[in-house]
Structures are given as structure tokens and as C-alpha cells.
Amino acid sequence: MHLAVPEGFIAFVEERPGVNTQGATIDEARPSLSEAVGLVMEANRAMAKADAAGATVIREPLRLTK
Image (tube, rainbow, N blue to C red; front, side, top):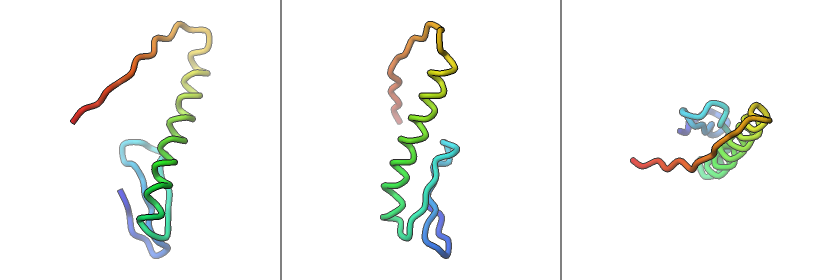
């Protein structure tokens, strides 16, 4: 989602708290938003790994369809 503000655009993912960025134009904000998604997922993965240290964890791929 993109929100127009006087400085340009704020881009965020409603379903993923913490994923947000900004840019002077939508075209600038869009790739930054993709990067923000990756960074938040990486951080969440690291925190989950630390929380599960020493436990038996089974990881499986999740495939979402429309």
C-alpha cells in the first residue's frame, strides 16, 4: 500500500507490521519496500531460531495460493 504525503510516498505492507519505507515517488518506494520485507523476514527468522535454540524444530515450506 502506498500513502501520498507532502514529502513523497510512504509504502507499507498492512499484513506485516514493521515493513515500511518511503520514497520521493512510488517507483522509488516500491523496491525499497521489497527490501524491507526481506529484512524483516530475515530478522524474524533469526529471532525464531534463537528462541528455538536446543529444541527439535521441523521446517517445512509453505505454499500460498489465491
